[in-house]
Length: 295
Length: 187
Image (cartoon, rainbow over all chains, first blue to last red):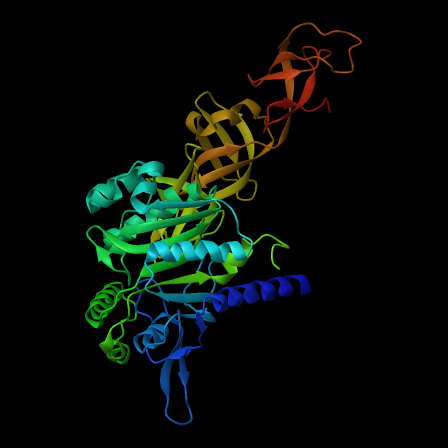
């Protein structure tokens, strides 16, 4: 018991030391928000507060991303946060309604510099395995013989069918993700540290887009998805478009579909400085740290 | 028959897939950070006996299969069909050759078997784990070899061929493990 607690405590101390050495400042942003998450497949947990005064609905944050971006737009400089996040309707072996997230932003970095920085972070946590960097198109080509960036929705459905996979999807990104989960992820188990980068533009989320690809990456440790990072979108108009699109999709799926968070969009009037950011699942990362590796 | 949502999936649940009744062997849920959850399910096709793998998106519904497994007594074979009786209801069921598969090599009259019914029609038969069969043909026995070091093929009264110890001779009754088709003793 105490050994496990001590390991987690040392692990967090190493992370804080890593950022302290790089002059990245720890911040703490609100966890109780006025707006729920808009990601199509991430659901906020809603709660009623102030029942005896003036009842209203609040939402536990699913990630500190938007609150941290308000700070960045206000001139915070490099920041990180370690906090609990909460998600509704989570299921699966590695998914929980509450988990710990490390989120950090580096000004002037692009995704490649951020991946390099993360390798150093992993090393200081005792994860020293060989590092693989593979593009999304590359893994699909090598592991599944699929030209993922140039295969249309109907052709992908035919491929999915031959693999016994569901094909009843509204949008191409859902099928791309399903194919990734079932054809690619099992092949990543043998790779101790693997970055997948340049996602199809259909999966850009809040990353910058360039032609067919979004400047987004994920980190897989022995086949387990541990982190998700972007060259961050900078402009209010871009965020407005992504949110509106996601909300529309949520509505189509019969999920809650909130109004636009104008407060956040207003905070971005100054736009974000050029930066790259990443969210890391702390429990998943800790589970891959060798015992006694921490100083 | 009711439909089942992926959230109700569990081992042993019977579903209709591609027209055949199937039983769930395993159900693994995957939820990518930014994507939709999916269920990777392994199933046994109860007609062909084959194992299949299917992936559903979470929330999808699949038609359930009305499948029951009943203990029934094997009565007799009338040339075309194998006849069983439910000892509770005394109802008799006739199973044709296709549903019997390997089971027919282990059927002994009066033995209790598991008969799988789909929409009240028998689709497969599982014999007991051990049955007593009579040797009808084998090479002459070697007297004195009771250690059972070697082995020889022996044809049973049901037609199945089992590897038996050298000392076993024609007319003897032997115990056979129906899951492995192996000799399991004399009593």
